Length: 457
Image (cartoon, rainbow, N blue to C red; front, side, top):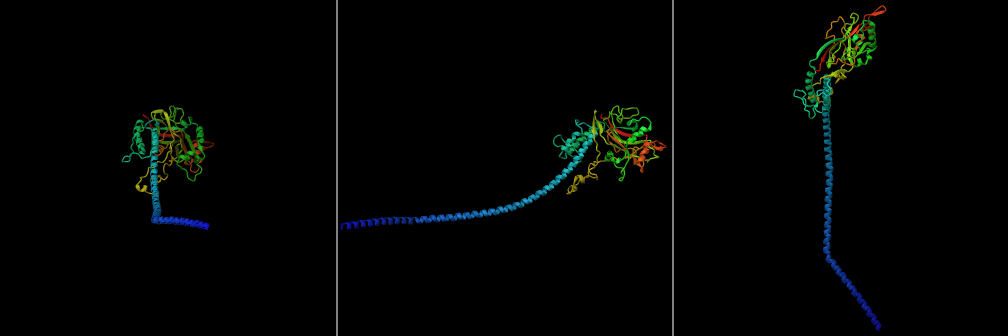
């Protein structure tokens, strides 16, 4: 009984303990729930603030996205506008460069043409004075300045070139002005403005070929040796002579006599030791230049040939002159006779043309700039013919030096006999036939020179 009661008491105590723990757990849970209920308001506020922050952040994102899209649209618009502007400027620049380059090209071409004229003037000045580069008034000293020139230089209101100062680029006009001033001094100092006129005759038979005897055979042999079968193949005739033959002609027999001239002490004109009957020019003059020259055919029978035999006299070698004030120094000049046409007046209308070219539009001769000037023939004189300086001499060689390394005298056979030029040459050289012998014929060829000599003092 007692055990039963003890067991019941234990069970009752156990149940009481369980109930007590359950009540404690309920009370703890109730306290926790009460705590959560008290925190609900603050948590709900935090959630509301978080939601509001999220919404604001989303709005800011959308605004930023809109700004980005607008910026992209502005970039596309800017690119399109800039591309259009660049294209416009590019075409404007292309047009500007085209007009500018065209203007520069026209100016450069016109400047180069002017430079050529000035350069040739300097070369002509050098030939006329023959001074060495060491001389301050020498033409050679101006050539470098002319080549280096990049400006026109000072020009007076009346178009005269003015000598520039020593500083800076003198330009083309500066070099030309100095040459003008120098020549005013040089032409008086070296006697260019007061030359001595002389007229002499020279025998080719006696003074060139040294045939002093009256025998015909040696002279005839010399002429036969200088006979050419076809003048058209001769380089001097093709290069220097104005053709007088018919365009249809293929064979032109001729007499071609080359010779050199000298102005040396103790020598005659043809470089032989001076002997009796010889003529010569004095080396006391630094330059002896031709005013006119004639060719005489001694023994020419006008009853058997034409009354107007025409010949060529060509300076095909180097012109030689002494240096003024230095008689021991000699200069050589390879003279090329060229056309130097006077340029036409240039107007704004001509320059404004798109196809304006200075070398074409300002040169007034068909052959253009610096075409070669060939030498025409002239009438030779003969015994019994009245020598006329105007009709029987050639002034085409005026200004050329008498002293030349090679002259070429040409007489075409067709000038003697138009039907048979070989027969004409035979009759000129050998004379008319008489039985088995030929008698008569040309006995001599004579050069008649009128010259101007400058003393250099």
